[in-house]
Length: 314
Ligand code: GDP
Image 1 (tube, rainbow, N blue to C red):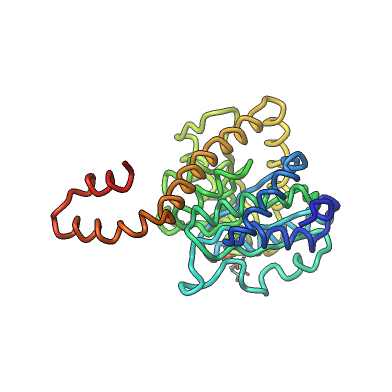
Image 2: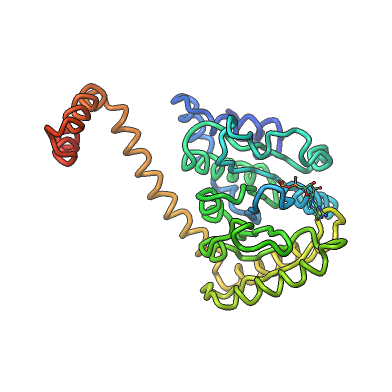
């Protein structure tokens, strides 16, 4: 695969490159690694933004409004997704072609659904690599979308510069799927659907979360903010972008952005090592031959789990 076309900003080359990093074939993996090595010096220049929230909160409506505004301002925008739900359990969050229809027609917007195969960790790794490819192709803003359930939020927060959680007006914390851990991940909470009858509720909800956030010590220079917007009526969206720009400017000036990315890379390295070790272990011919028998012996109580593990990992 030719890195030059990707670096020249070809969308076709980008789509093909992402298909390559998503592939589970060994020869594709080798090509993907070579490509990533070649383009690495051209990565890191975008602002990476994570967006999460429960289904129905308005993520795709928000991304469309936000994205159209950025494109109109002359930015190139890529939208990636980390989707923990299996296709059987309700489908990929970006699988529905009608989502973000207007944005997807824009020349300077690139929308890519979630990779579907494999464990969540694997999906998230592929999205990280896709993010680097988008940067190499010259995209200025990368949005990584995820559904607000469970582990995927941690995965996405660990690959972005700014993590934004969309919320509904006046729903209890449980309804929002908000756990304390998620609050700690958020650089901003944005109460969507602040329009019509929802506007008053949204303002009160904002106050509620603003107070709650004050109780959390986030650490670092940035104090998480709570904003209101209406993705449908397209107001309050520019304030979200202004806030992210302010964060980026300050984080760059005081070194926090570089530190955050370095920390993320360190954690990614550890995870990759653990995954590669496990993969090697599982595909080792001796392990494949002996593991089923050892498992049986453990189940029958003839061998302790530790003794069985030690036989496979002397
Ligand atoms: P997602 O599941 O989080 O991607 O949510 P969608 O963007 O598909 O939106 C779910 C529903 O909420 C749709 O019917 C949208 O039209 C509606 N919606 C999204 N944003 C707003 C908003 O700002 N105000 C109102 N009133 N409705 C909205």
